[in-house]
Length: 324
Image 1 (cartoon, rainbow, N blue to C red):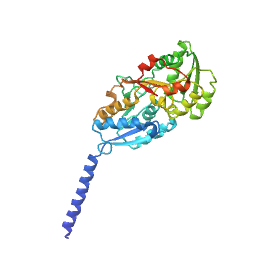
Image 2: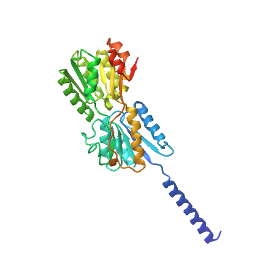
Image 3: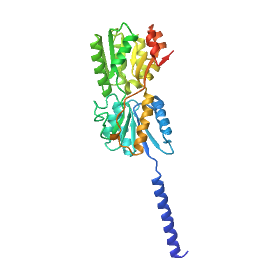
Image 4: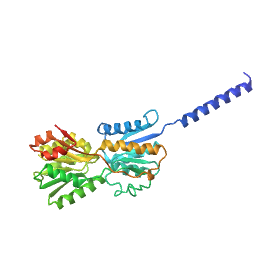
């Protein structure tokens, strides 16, 4: 081959490679960073609901969008590390749920958009400036604490309630806020209050054992540590003959007596709508934080029977789901 022909061939090949690389870069799909507070097994139904709604909106995982999953396994101390890893990957948006996880993500980046599928008090914890005008790079859905409503339902389920124990992880913003509110509400109603303050799983059993007949029911503040150890908490409460009130039906499915709160599946599905808008160019600061619209009252009649406890028919009639 003559030198001119050879150089032309090499130049043509180089140009072809350059064009192919440019086309590949142009066709690069956006990446979502999924920051899970819990383990994959504990959170897979919520992740599946999120992915399914994304698909309905035109984002097919592995084809039109990539998702990087990272899990904190219920350990609050791992959230900062996991959030930082997603930032290093330069994902286009981070989606997560739970106040502690959102706080960790916000501390890790002020640039990458963050969508939360549930935060008890996003304004009070400084995640957003206001619900109508989030400002910054964070927006999503509030899940509301609803302690007064849960207390009302617990008193209806346990008519003789006089002494209330409250368990919360005080190492979590959610735990501190909700424990404070439920204590104030309980005392307003003239109830005696016993606080079970925990920070790690090893403190759960001693905390419940320390009650020793000092309570008629146990109000459990939901967050990652509590959710991860939900079966242990409910088993110990059952052994202590304590009816339990929770904030999400997964804890009732794991042996709790009743729960009331927003549908977490619905929140994750709605979070997908936020992610869709952001991937299409919207800014988090322009997307107001929305309130939950779907709430669930779930009652476990099997646990009621084991406790020798009768749930009033009027309360059963209002339940969205009854586990028998």
